[in-house]
Image (tube, rainbow, N blue to C red; front, side, top):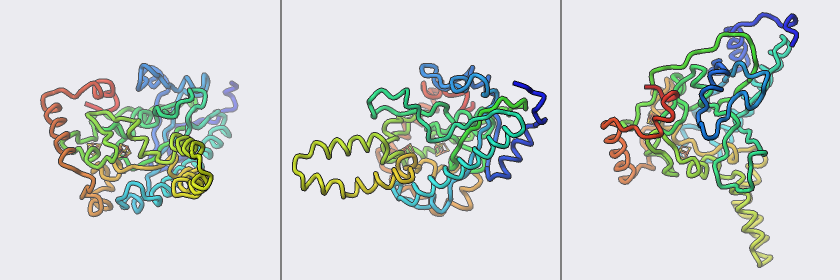
Length: 326
Ligand code: SF4
Ligand code: SF4
């Protein structure tokens, strides 16, 4: 590349631009550090797997979700899905404007959005958890924006886990941020993400992603294929027609229309997490009580607390401690 045409740039300038465009949080991760430390060694998804040339820095940009939607307690309320999808749309514009701005000054860039799943990796079975080409939560930790929580969600000092992320890759010659060393998560002593989870997906520093996806993407690709299969298998034409007009098909149509319910869905673990400057003043009154909590969940939390107190944090922690903190 001809660097003579590049306008001098700094990390502060990049962050100011992102904030000017509407970002609530922004940090810069070192692509080489991310290449050397993939979150899953069995299935490494590194910046260098996306581009050979332009992943020297991973600029992680986040916007907070709306607190009014957060304060709706029912995880499956469509207002929540739609509000989050609008936040994703806003992030897409910010990321695209960042790419144009960087490229105008001589730095090629590309976006890793929060909704992109690589179809080349799909093997014909919609059941397994579909991962992004790059874990944005891990990238955010590398960019100094927060640490991972009990269920491996990103927690930030400002908004706890109530953020949606995107990333811009570019080999801009600016300083990268450092990771936080202190964990923000209060661990099983808190355990509110486990108490609220409708999918019983939260463990000790791990998440059952397949169980979570049923709620996190309630009208996603798996549900669409299941529904179409049921319609095809129905032998009575009248019942078949009625199925095309039922609530399931309505949800699928609405999800395909905007992605709400397909790429957004349950986020109760984010809603009830007490980490974040926003919680005490804007959320506590509506979120303090967790109606989904049960005796069985409390017993499981007690077990996790005992494990943690005995110094047995489990393989989930060992694999993720770089991002959870210690
Ligand atoms: S998104 Fe919903 S289902 Fe998934 S871990 Fe959080 S609370 Fe549980
Ligand atoms: S709800 Fe509590 S345990 Fe769960 S991530 Fe937040 S601080 Fe950690």
